[in-house]
Length: 270
Image (cartoon, rainbow, N blue to C red; front, side, top):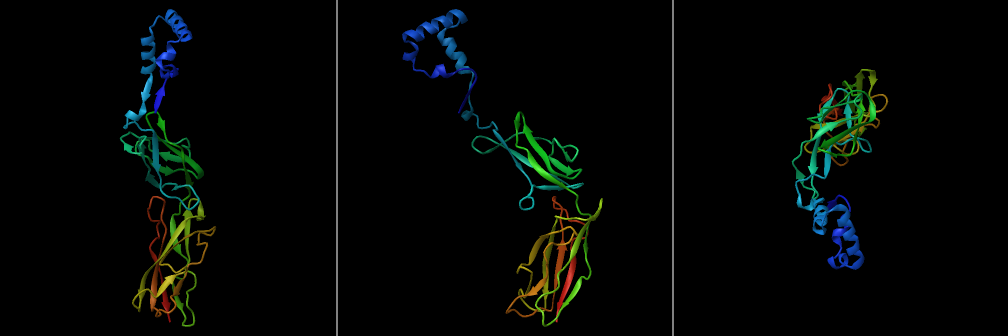
Protein backbone atom coordinates (compact mmCIF):
# COMPACT_ATOMS: atom_id res chain seq x y z
CA UNK A 1 0.00 0.00 0.00
CA UNK A 2 1.52 3.33 -1.06
CA UNK A 3 0.76 6.79 0.25
CA UNK A 4 1.73 9.54 -2.19
CA UNK A 5 1.73 13.33 -2.06
CA UNK A 6 0.95 15.22 -5.24
CA UNK A 7 -0.01 13.69 -8.59
CA UNK A 8 2.09 10.58 -8.91
CA UNK A 9 -0.02 8.94 -11.62
CA UNK A 10 2.44 10.09 -14.31
CA UNK A 11 5.12 7.74 -12.98
CA UNK A 12 2.86 4.74 -13.68
CA UNK A 13 2.66 5.35 -17.48
CA UNK A 14 4.85 3.17 -19.75
CA UNK A 15 7.81 5.07 -21.18
CA UNK A 16 6.68 4.76 -24.85
CA UNK A 17 3.51 6.65 -24.03
CA UNK A 18 5.54 9.44 -22.44
CA UNK A 19 7.54 9.81 -25.66
CA UNK A 20 4.75 10.10 -28.19
CA UNK A 21 4.41 13.42 -29.90
CA UNK A 22 1.87 15.13 -27.63
CA UNK A 23 3.57 13.92 -24.47
CA UNK A 24 6.94 15.13 -25.74
CA UNK A 25 5.58 18.62 -26.44
CA UNK A 26 3.98 18.70 -22.98
CA UNK A 27 7.20 17.67 -21.20
CA UNK A 28 9.24 20.24 -23.13
CA UNK A 29 6.84 22.97 -21.99
CA UNK A 30 7.08 21.75 -18.39
CA UNK A 31 10.88 21.74 -18.49
CA UNK A 32 10.96 25.25 -19.97
CA UNK A 33 8.62 26.65 -17.32
CA UNK A 34 9.91 24.72 -14.27
CA UNK A 35 13.57 24.42 -15.23
CA UNK A 36 13.79 20.70 -14.35
CA UNK A 37 14.59 17.63 -16.41
CA UNK A 38 12.31 14.63 -16.97
CA UNK A 39 14.56 12.55 -14.67
CA UNK A 40 14.31 15.16 -11.91
CA UNK A 41 10.52 15.35 -12.33
CA UNK A 42 10.18 11.59 -11.84
CA UNK A 43 12.56 11.62 -8.88
CA UNK A 44 10.61 14.36 -7.06
CA UNK A 45 7.34 12.49 -7.55
CA UNK A 46 8.71 9.15 -6.39
CA UNK A 47 10.37 10.65 -3.31
CA UNK A 48 6.97 11.79 -1.99
CA UNK A 49 5.65 8.20 -1.81
CA UNK A 50 5.76 6.08 1.37
CA UNK A 51 5.56 2.29 1.17
CA UNK A 52 3.73 1.47 4.44
CA UNK A 53 4.05 -2.26 3.89
CA UNK A 54 7.80 -2.02 4.57
CA UNK A 55 7.34 -0.55 8.07
CA UNK A 56 5.90 -3.22 10.35
CA UNK A 57 6.62 -1.15 13.49
CA UNK A 58 4.28 1.69 12.51
CA UNK A 59 0.97 1.55 14.46
CA UNK A 60 -2.16 2.03 12.39
CA UNK A 61 -4.82 1.50 15.08
CA UNK A 62 -5.28 1.51 18.86
CA UNK A 63 -7.21 -1.18 20.72
CA UNK A 64 -8.67 -0.26 24.13
CA UNK A 65 -9.51 -2.99 26.60
CA UNK A 66 -12.35 -2.23 29.01
CA UNK A 67 -14.08 -4.22 31.76
CA UNK A 68 -17.27 -5.95 30.70
CA UNK A 69 -20.47 -4.08 31.42
CA UNK A 70 -23.90 -5.46 32.15
CA UNK A 71 -25.51 -7.19 29.15
CA UNK A 72 -26.60 -4.51 26.69
CA UNK A 73 -24.87 -1.67 28.54
CA UNK A 74 -21.65 0.32 28.44
CA UNK A 75 -18.82 -0.56 30.84
CA UNK A 76 -19.45 1.10 34.19
CA UNK A 77 -17.42 3.05 36.71
CA UNK A 78 -18.74 4.20 40.07
CA UNK A 79 -18.26 7.56 41.74
CA UNK A 80 -15.17 7.31 43.92
CA UNK A 81 -14.18 3.89 42.56
CA UNK A 82 -11.15 3.57 40.30
CA UNK A 83 -9.56 1.10 37.90
CA UNK A 84 -7.05 1.19 35.06
CA UNK A 85 -7.73 0.92 31.35
CA UNK A 86 -5.23 -0.67 28.99
CA UNK A 87 -4.55 -0.19 25.30
CA UNK A 88 -2.18 -1.54 22.68
CA UNK A 89 -1.01 -0.26 19.33
CA UNK A 90 -1.43 -2.59 16.35
CA UNK A 91 0.40 -2.57 13.02
CA UNK A 92 -1.15 -3.40 9.65
CA UNK A 93 -0.67 -7.13 10.35
CA UNK A 94 -2.63 -6.89 13.61
CA UNK A 95 0.49 -7.41 15.72
CA UNK A 96 1.17 -5.39 18.87
CA UNK A 97 3.97 -2.84 18.51
CA UNK A 98 5.68 -0.63 21.13
CA UNK A 99 3.98 2.74 21.66
CA UNK A 100 3.54 5.40 24.34
CA UNK A 101 -0.17 5.68 25.12
CA UNK A 102 -1.72 8.93 26.42
CA UNK A 103 -5.32 9.12 27.73
CA UNK A 104 -7.95 11.86 27.74
CA UNK A 105 -11.66 12.50 28.31
CA UNK A 106 -13.81 15.35 26.97
CA UNK A 107 -16.17 14.83 29.93
CA UNK A 108 -13.91 16.09 32.70
CA UNK A 109 -16.82 17.18 34.93
CA UNK A 110 -18.04 13.58 35.16
CA UNK A 111 -14.96 11.41 34.81
CA UNK A 112 -11.34 11.66 35.96
CA UNK A 113 -8.69 10.11 33.70
CA UNK A 114 -4.98 9.90 34.50
CA UNK A 115 -3.35 10.76 31.18
CA UNK A 116 -0.29 8.56 31.79
CA UNK A 117 -1.67 5.47 33.54
CA UNK A 118 -5.20 5.28 32.12
CA UNK A 119 -6.73 5.06 35.60
CA UNK A 120 -10.31 6.37 35.62
CA UNK A 121 -12.68 7.35 38.43
CA UNK A 122 -16.27 8.52 38.44
CA UNK A 123 -17.09 12.06 39.59
CA UNK A 124 -20.77 12.63 38.70
CA UNK A 125 -23.45 10.37 37.17
CA UNK A 126 -23.50 10.31 33.35
CA UNK A 127 -24.81 7.73 30.91
CA UNK A 128 -22.09 8.15 28.28
CA UNK A 129 -18.79 9.49 29.62
CA UNK A 130 -16.13 9.25 26.89
CA UNK A 131 -12.48 8.15 27.02
CA UNK A 132 -9.91 8.17 24.21
CA UNK A 133 -6.35 6.90 23.82
CA UNK A 134 -3.63 8.48 21.66
CA UNK A 135 -0.14 7.66 20.49
CA UNK A 136 1.51 10.41 18.45
CA UNK A 137 -1.15 11.64 15.99
CA UNK A 138 -3.03 8.31 16.03
CA UNK A 139 -6.33 8.42 17.96
CA UNK A 140 -8.48 5.54 19.15
CA UNK A 141 -12.25 5.46 18.87
CA UNK A 142 -14.09 7.05 21.79
CA UNK A 143 -15.09 4.45 24.40
CA UNK A 144 -18.13 5.23 26.55
CA UNK A 145 -18.64 4.49 30.25
CA UNK A 146 -21.70 4.74 32.45
CA UNK A 147 -20.81 6.69 35.60
CA UNK A 148 -22.95 5.34 38.45
CA UNK A 149 -23.70 6.16 42.05
CA UNK A 150 -22.22 3.15 43.82
CA UNK A 151 -23.62 1.30 46.84
CA UNK A 152 -22.04 1.96 50.22
CA UNK A 153 -23.37 -1.13 51.97
CA UNK A 154 -25.03 -4.51 51.51
CA UNK A 155 -27.60 -5.51 54.13
CA UNK A 156 -29.48 -8.75 54.72
CA UNK A 157 -33.19 -8.06 55.13
CA UNK A 158 -34.22 -10.15 58.17
CA UNK A 159 -34.53 -12.95 58.78
CA UNK A 160 -31.21 -14.51 57.84
CA UNK A 161 -32.23 -18.00 59.01
CA UNK A 162 -35.12 -20.12 57.70
CA UNK A 163 -36.73 -23.52 58.22
CA UNK A 164 -38.14 -25.58 55.37
CA UNK A 165 -40.94 -27.90 56.47
CA UNK A 166 -40.95 -31.53 55.41
CA UNK A 167 -43.91 -30.82 53.16
CA UNK A 168 -41.99 -28.12 51.28
CA UNK A 169 -39.18 -28.42 48.74
CA UNK A 170 -38.03 -24.79 48.69
CA UNK A 171 -37.29 -21.97 51.10
CA UNK A 172 -38.83 -18.52 51.11
CA UNK A 173 -36.86 -15.91 49.09
CA UNK A 174 -33.48 -14.80 50.42
CA UNK A 175 -33.51 -10.99 50.45
CA UNK A 176 -30.60 -8.56 50.65
CA UNK A 177 -30.45 -4.85 49.84
CA UNK A 178 -27.90 -2.39 48.46
CA UNK A 179 -27.94 1.16 49.85
CA UNK A 180 -25.99 4.36 49.31
CA UNK A 181 -25.41 7.23 51.73
CA UNK A 182 -25.02 10.06 49.20
CA UNK A 183 -27.80 10.44 48.29
CA UNK A 184 -29.34 8.31 51.00
CA UNK A 185 -31.41 5.47 49.57
CA UNK A 186 -31.45 2.14 47.72
CA UNK A 187 -29.32 1.45 44.63
CA UNK A 188 -31.01 0.04 41.53
CA UNK A 189 -29.44 -1.70 38.55
CA UNK A 190 -26.52 -3.21 40.45
CA UNK A 191 -25.47 -6.85 40.43
CA UNK A 192 -25.86 -9.00 43.56
CA UNK A 193 -24.35 -12.49 43.79
CA UNK A 194 -25.82 -15.40 45.81
CA UNK A 195 -23.62 -18.48 46.26
CA UNK A 196 -24.63 -21.78 47.88
CA UNK A 197 -21.37 -22.57 49.68
CA UNK A 198 -22.05 -25.51 52.01
CA UNK A 199 -24.47 -28.44 52.25
CA UNK A 200 -24.69 -30.36 55.56
CA UNK A 201 -26.08 -33.81 56.30
CA UNK A 202 -25.83 -35.61 52.98
CA UNK A 203 -22.98 -36.30 50.55
CA UNK A 204 -23.10 -34.69 47.12
CA UNK A 205 -25.25 -31.87 45.78
CA UNK A 206 -28.64 -32.35 47.41
CA UNK A 207 -29.78 -28.71 47.14
CA UNK A 208 -29.38 -25.77 44.79
CA UNK A 209 -30.47 -22.20 44.30
CA UNK A 210 -33.49 -21.34 42.18
CA UNK A 211 -32.72 -22.10 38.56
CA UNK A 212 -30.80 -25.25 39.53
CA UNK A 213 -27.47 -23.42 40.00
CA UNK A 214 -25.01 -23.00 42.86
CA UNK A 215 -24.28 -19.34 42.09
CA UNK A 216 -26.84 -16.85 40.86
CA UNK A 217 -26.29 -13.21 39.85
CA UNK A 218 -29.29 -10.89 39.85
CA UNK A 219 -29.94 -7.18 39.40
CA UNK A 220 -31.38 -4.92 42.06
CA UNK A 221 -34.57 -2.96 41.48
CA UNK A 222 -35.80 0.39 42.76
CA UNK A 223 -35.88 -0.97 46.34
CA UNK A 224 -32.22 -2.04 46.15
CA UNK A 225 -33.39 -5.67 46.42
CA UNK A 226 -33.26 -8.46 43.79
CA UNK A 227 -35.74 -8.12 40.94
CA UNK A 228 -36.17 -11.92 40.83
CA UNK A 229 -36.60 -14.34 43.73
CA UNK A 230 -33.58 -16.30 44.90
CA UNK A 231 -34.35 -19.30 47.12
CA UNK A 232 -32.94 -22.69 48.10
CA UNK A 233 -34.60 -25.84 46.79
CA UNK A 234 -34.04 -29.56 47.20
CA UNK A 235 -32.98 -31.61 44.21
CA UNK A 236 -35.58 -34.16 43.09
CA UNK A 237 -34.61 -37.79 43.75
CA UNK A 238 -31.71 -36.70 46.01
CA UNK A 239 -31.61 -37.16 49.79
CA UNK A 240 -32.88 -34.20 51.76
CA UNK A 241 -30.06 -32.12 53.32
CA UNK A 242 -29.96 -31.07 56.97
CA UNK A 243 -29.07 -27.44 56.23
CA UNK A 244 -27.27 -25.23 53.72
CA UNK A 245 -25.33 -21.95 53.82
CA UNK A 246 -25.77 -19.22 51.19
CA UNK A 247 -23.43 -16.22 50.95
CA UNK A 248 -24.47 -12.93 49.36
CA UNK A 249 -22.04 -10.36 47.93
CA UNK A 250 -21.81 -7.41 45.58
CA UNK A 251 -18.82 -5.91 43.80
CA UNK A 252 -17.79 -2.65 42.22
CA UNK A 253 -16.73 -2.55 38.53
CA UNK A 254 -13.12 -2.50 39.74
CA UNK A 255 -13.70 -5.83 41.50
CA UNK A 256 -13.65 -4.39 45.03
CA UNK A 257 -16.23 -5.94 47.37
CA UNK A 258 -18.96 -3.65 48.65
CA UNK A 259 -19.01 -3.42 52.49
CA UNK A 260 -21.34 -6.07 53.91
CA UNK A 261 -20.45 -8.63 51.25
CA UNK A 262 -19.97 -12.22 52.44
CA UNK A 263 -22.90 -12.30 54.85
CA UNK A 264 -24.58 -15.69 55.17
CA UNK A 265 -28.12 -17.07 55.10
CA UNK A 266 -28.78 -20.34 56.97
CA UNK A 267 -31.51 -22.61 55.61
CA UNK A 268 -32.52 -25.68 57.69
CA UNK A 269 -34.57 -28.58 56.37
CA UNK A 270 -36.97 -30.57 58.62
